[in-house]
Image 1 (cartoon, protein in one colour):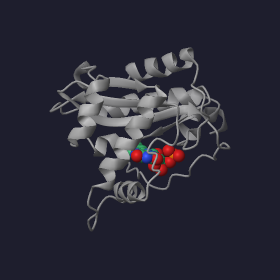
Image 2 (image 1 turned 45 degrees about the vertical axis):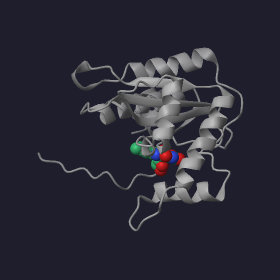
Image 3 (image 1 turned 180 degrees about the horizontal axis):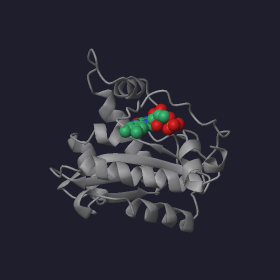
Image 4 (image 1 turned 60 degrees about the horizontal axis):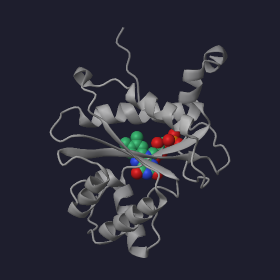
Length: 199
Ligand SMILES: Cc1cc2nc3c(=O)[nH]c(=O)nc-3n(C[C@H](O)[C@H](O)[C@H](O)COP(=O)(O)O)c2cc1C
């Protein structure tokens, strides 16, 4: 096992953790290019390659988007059995000062064609590739799902369309990205994801 952990890909998979505290400075252009290239090299159903990446680095836009996300979440109802993270976003938004991307200097929104059956898995492959590429460059990232939850929200969709999202695209996920401001976390022990061998 020790030998395999020296393999860079495997060790990045094991050591990658979600980062929720970032330095304000942008990552270098060449680092961003490598991360995006890793995302673009993800496999896709039928080699479709329709995942669209919106890379938001403009701080004014990010501020506006944060405020809009907070406003829209704050108006949503909480109901019994609601997904706990979604409920958390709504409650935090009602309190005010909610930052769904943890002050990261960049947010990469991933979208795909509405009605395309592999929209979500294709985006997930892109996001995972980018998270692992970021980890290999010692750059922090965290999957950000809030814009996906708000995909049906007209105000959010219209705002994202102004940034370049196409009218026939659906938001599938997102990634906050930046230099880590927190101390490095230990690998998270996984106790789920059971394996059944049929041999
Ligand atoms: C589909 C998916 C959605 C997620 N959404 C969010 C999110 O909206 N905000 C967040 O802080 N983390 C989000 N995460 C990160 C998970 O909370 C995290 O991966 C998990 O707790 C394991 O921790 P680790 O990434 O540090 O190993 C998401 C992860 C996945 C795979």
